[in-house]
Length: 341
Image 1: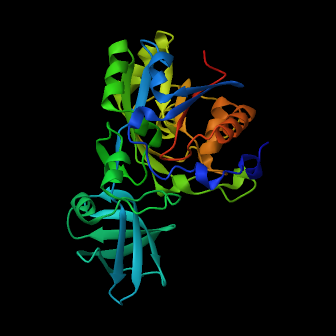
Image 2: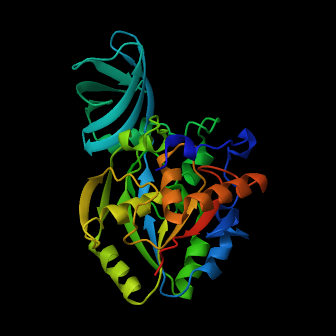
Image 3: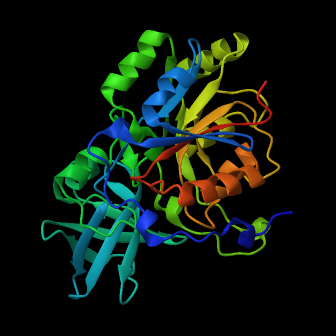
C-alpha cells in the first residue's frame, strides 16, 4: 500500500516552465513503455499513433475566473470562480480577512456587484446580477496556476487554451491538449487517427496537494463531466478493431474512466470524484498523453497507476536529469498501460 510520501520528489525550480514555447507542438515528448524510455519531439506523436486509433480530447475552455474586489464594508476580497451553476450563480473560493456572510455584497473588478449566498463546504455561492459568462469574459482575469509567477497577458489568453476548446467552464486548462496545433491535428486526421471529445470542467482542486499520509483519508475534489453518445460509439468502434483509446490528458482519462465504472462506457453527465491510485484497473483507456505533474498530487498518483509506480519514478528522474520542462507550460509524456490488450 502506497502512502503520500511515496509520491514526493525534488524538482529544481528552473525546471518549472514559466512560459509556453513559441510553437505549440515544439515541446519534447518522453515515450514511456514500461522501463523503456525514448526521448522524442511532440510531433513524433504522428508516427506513434496508427490509423483507427482514437484520440479523446477535453473540449472545455478556461474561464477568466479570477477577480479582485471589495466588500461593502471596504475589506479587500479575492474571488476564484470554481464552477458555474447557472447563468446567474457560481461556486467560488473567496479570500478575505473576514469570511463574508450571506447577503454581503462584493464589488468585483470595480465594475459589478455580486451577493454572497449560502456556504457549500469550502466554497461560497455567489449570485450575479447579469449573465455570468458575459461578466467573467469581460472583467475577469485568467487564473494561471500558482507556480506560474508572471501576471497573465494576452499571450496567455491564447496559449492557456487548447485549439479545440469550445465549452466554457474550467478554471484550469487541460494542459496535455495545449501541445496540439491545427496543423498537427490535420496531419493526424489525414493519417486516419480518429477524434472524439469529452467535456470535463477542470477545477482549482487539480493543483491541491494531498495532505494526508494515508491516501484512503484523502477527500477528492469533484468535477463535472459530460460523455457524449458519439464518443461512446467511437470508443466501441476503436476497441472492436483492436485500436488504442488514447486519452489526451488526465481530465479526459478521468471522464472516460468515471463513465466506465459499471464496466461499460456509458453516455451522460455527472460529477466525478474518482481518485485513481496504483492498483486501479483501467476499463477504457489504453494510452495517455500527459504533462509532468506536481509532487504529492492526485495526478502523479493517477499516472503511476496507469504506467506503473517504479516506471513513473524512473521516467521523472530521467526527465529532470534531461532538463525536460515541467507542469502546465511544459513538455509531455506518452504512456502505455501494461494491461493494454
